[in-house]
Image (cartoon, rainbow, N blue to C red; front, side, top):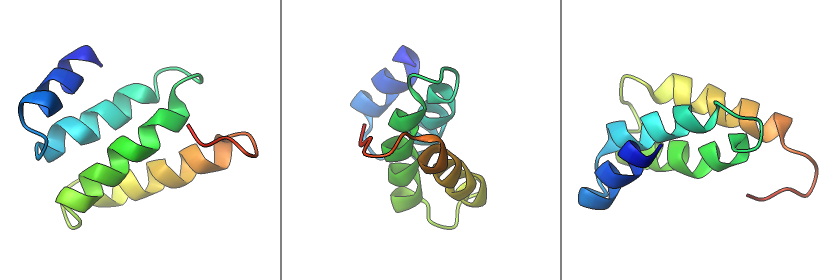
Length: 72
């Protein structure tokens, strides 16, 4: 995750880094909710990108798995 965060820090419009950071957050149940903003940023930058449909599905899965009231 640190690598993707650094890539985003260097270039906030790096859609691929936002997507990969979102994927990385799925590595632990404790960070799944954090995937949503990263994937939403990817979609903002590349709404029809190669990973757009996967990002939408991952966002839906993350939101479905989040406990009620959780807004990480």
